[in-house]
Length: 100
Image (cartoon, rainbow, N blue to C red; front, side, top):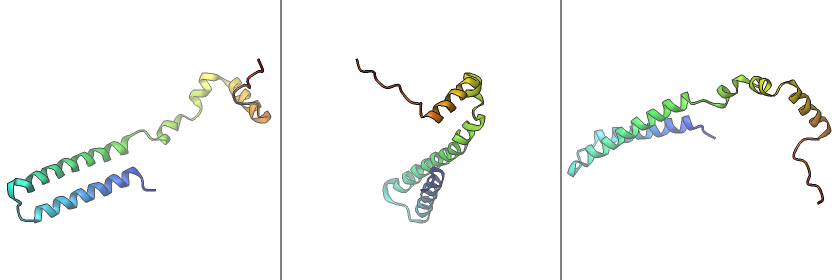
């Protein structure tokens, strides 16, 4: 499965190729070539910005850098003891409904 970054790079390459093709072809009537090249330039700028943003966005690796330190501070060591006890007895989850 290709990543978003590779897909954006491929899209940028395709747009660039289309712009180069239009640059080497004879001018179309009614200023169509210039309008198309202007649209392609805008698309190139947008894909370039998206590529920059995709490299600087906070990924799970960056966000998970703290590990369990924040959870540990918030809940304390007793929280981890309870979790371990529930794993050993399969006692986790939501309590069952009582017959009422």
